[in-house]
Length: 139
Image (cartoon, rainbow, N blue to C red; front, side, top):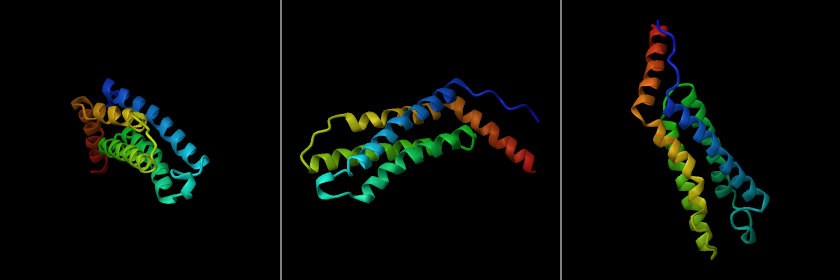
């Protein structure tokens, strides 16, 4: 059995960008909770707050799954969820008459870039090598 291959550049870049993308998601989720929810005057909406808390957890899970060379699809799912979270923030802000501009979509920048980097062919080969090695060990 061959030694595990080194992590390719795009995979390393995807991991770093995904890790950097968790911090703004955590900050936004913390601020939403600390300031009383998305619609502070109307009372705390725990469903929407919970969805915002789920975003950094999903991103961390996807990063761990990716670094364990199990697959790269969770990074794409996390990126899509973050974009959906940005849309949620924009829609709720618009419904209460607040303009947020591009701010929420900047949150989705790192997860989307990480997912795009993870979908490179070199990263797929790197992940496939690990899957083949795990199958060979079990057989």
